[in-house]
Image (cartoon, rainbow, N blue to C red; front, top):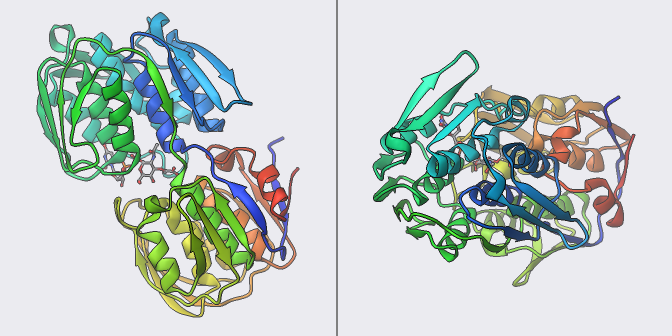
Length: 420
Ligand code: EPU
């Protein structure tokens, strides 16, 4: 039987909680390993379900993986990669598997895979990836469940691609595809998340020639090979922001350690505006008991308010004084979890799939919930901490996808949570 979380509400979170390496960076570095000609050592690696699936995909392709959980490290040797077909089952579980298409196509001139799947918001389109690959000279053959991409003449060639919509994984995948392509690639209207320049820095250290990562225009001059190397995953800004909101929701004095507050540039001023008392250091954020007022937000691509922090912020607004409007602009369906907060007692009206109006504060009561995706799932855990009584959460694979040993880490700061 599947695991559940059981949470008893009412406890304040106090003490210190450390932020782990960023899921959404580790996944990209693992994809980049395919391009390398020797072993890549990755430090501050988060051992979560999503990165485990990605490591399994690499092993299926022929890579050798060494894991050291105590040192939070993995070493991946890509030299044995022979297969260019991604495992169907794993691809269906992990949207991020599409990342591997870029480096496989770039290095071997070929890749075959099913349409990537994942959680309820994971099954989104991949049209920009396909269009981008075509601009680099790839031909696409569609089959019933997936597609096969082949580079004309066995090697991609540089090209220009303007992303019609800003896409994080799309930007990274195209950047990876272009590293070994012949000639210059220019990508425009790129995503600018901090995980992108750090990925480019790593690739450049290994011999790639990438300029402009972290801005909306990235230029890649193709090289014929890149070496292996060492990389340290940056702290997870989404985990950090979620823990800060947890401190504010429970009214505790909580120090969120090992984070880069700068990466929460859009979020911290909003939290301060709603009345959050925070102490911000160079690598920590401390929360203090605060009276929270309502404010409206709109999610935006980086450096705007991250969509991944919208669910915990929405919960925070159920406990704030006044009325707030939350507008989700990145993912359709990312506000649907709010109907479960309503069953707990929250006053939330959905105007359309992209907007909710929240009146607060409202007392929440423990209920049985089901996690539809990662960020809604962790928000339900937070809701359980605020609610009176017992909350149970189903489908917690969705939470384990992105938060390592979450219950152990939460218990240490005072949360009454168990895995049953
Ligand atoms: N989109 C298309 N066509 C495409 C690609 C994307 O229409 O070919 C659309 C999507 O449907 C969405 C929008 O473009 O509406 C933006 O999606 P994007 O491609 O930026 O999302 P992503 O790169 O797949 C990453 C993170 C997400 C995070 C978003 C936005 C990874 C592995 N995932 O997704 O993280 O929410 O960027 O910041 O990096 C999470 O960690 O919980 C998570 C969902």
